[in-house]
Amino acid sequence: MGELTIPVLPCRTLEPVLDFYTALGFDVTFRQSSPNPYAVVSRGDVQLHFFGMRRYEPAASYSTCVLRTDDVDALHEAFRAGLKAAYGRVPTRGLPRLGALRTASHGVRQFLMTDPGGNCVRVAQDLGGDQHHRPAPPGAVARALHQAALFADSREDPAAAARVLDRVLDRVPGPVPGRTRDASGPEPSGPEPSGTEPAGPEPSGTEPAGPEPSGTEPAGPEPSGTEPAGPEPSGTEPAGPEPSGTEPAGPEPSGTEPADPAAPRPTAVELLRLLVLRADVARRLGDERTAADALARARAVALDGAGRREARDDLRRLRELEVD
Image (cartoon, rainbow, N blue to C red; front, side, top):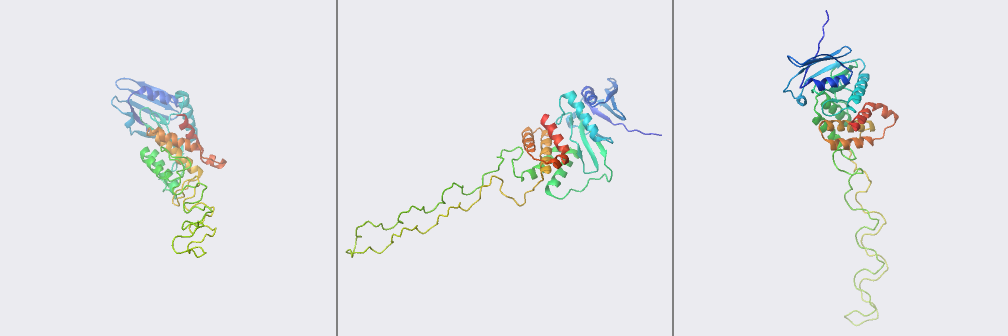
């Protein structure tokens, strides 16, 4: 005897939901409007059922299901192509939207897809091994990426993911997404180099302050034919700071952020992942300024051939976010 479980998911109206799944390559195999709105879509061995609710709010939905596949990369690519053909782009924010393809920490490679009814379909491929989430990896950057991905995808909490990412990105030299800061960092505080001598007595090649030889006798006792006791002109510089031709002590301008021994130092791939994920969650939160800043900074990350191969999922997501 065989068994089969089929999810029955809510929506406000059937039409946009059916259009969405049709774009993904599903067929509408059943539809009715009375006594209650109900429809069925299928693609291969996958079936999804939907029912209409007038007072249902898709943006507040928590309904979800898991779709298992043995080739998640191919399915993600097929869904991307179908959505682009139907919508003119791959939607990455609002409803509907297609999430990034990622290898998760619980032994699956997956992406999240949310339909116009607010139903989240988790499309996953089992990579084998323990299905429990792995412990957070060592290192501030790797740990932040691990935690932020859990918040963004597993818990559907983009605001918490943004806070985790900002704690790292705020300490990495360079412009901070969503804030105005020059790419070279702030000017160091302290004396500003000007190419001139430091403040202090200025060498002038003249006699030091004090009694000035005038060629006349000083007031007081009768002249004796000699100069009065007192400072003797010597042609040397007065005592005090001696000009050395070097800059005054103080912060040295470098054009970069001041060194912070405790600041995280992400690799190029890690930095790209931080910024792409930050842009992704910003879009989901409706924060377009932060998304645009993070995308601009992500585009500037230089990767070698090995880095591009390692970050292929993130680079594909970067392209999707730039178009949407």
